[in-house]
Length: 175
Length: 141
Image (cartoon, rainbow over all chains, first blue to last red; front, side, top):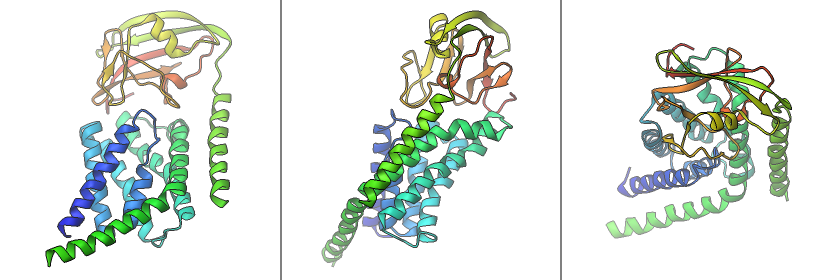
């Protein structure tokens, strides 16, 4: 990986982390799903995994002192985006398909935490936790759907243009 | 056009879900509940019987009768327990029982059942007994 890509990944992590902190007063309302889908669309699978790992480590360090009960499910859940994008989604840039994916992801993200929270709090019953988590999942799913549906395409075009343009500029300047 | 239809459907789904959840989440018109607070060594710090009306919430009753502290957006203890949009406040302190959320927390038991709902989502029924107990993370319930 070249220095420019590393810089772009670092800045992407900073953007995701900052917007999340700015929107922290609104539970589960954030642009993280949108931004990760956009970045996964323009970065390779390996770069996306590095981006998500960096973001999750930073977020867990800041919010929960690298608590494994948050870090592990968060990492697994966010990894699902690049994995799905490069497999079942077939690298699509269709915003409707991606918006529906973001909607489903809102629920999957919540479910991923359930076994870890049950272990952490010593809860044995799954059903009440599943029901209690539904409002948060609905908010995350709807926010993901709406933001991807309306903002994905312009952001993707912008990011793609930056990646392509900067590639040329960087190549010329180094030569 | 397709995007507009999907967006409207999503917003209707969001609004409908919350209307349905609030419909099933109504307290009794009036009654009496008992609140007990248990500290880290298992001693009962306080027990109070409190009357409520349909206007009251469990948090209101706690706030009026105990000194409470809640988690702020960074899960640090704060005396400002402002209502949070869509979700529930996180109780971190009741009188002298203080928790840090990472290593310990306040568990809520409703009629001897471990509550998985937050303080703002629990409905009040006449005769309910609520126990607020200091718990260590990973400990037994």
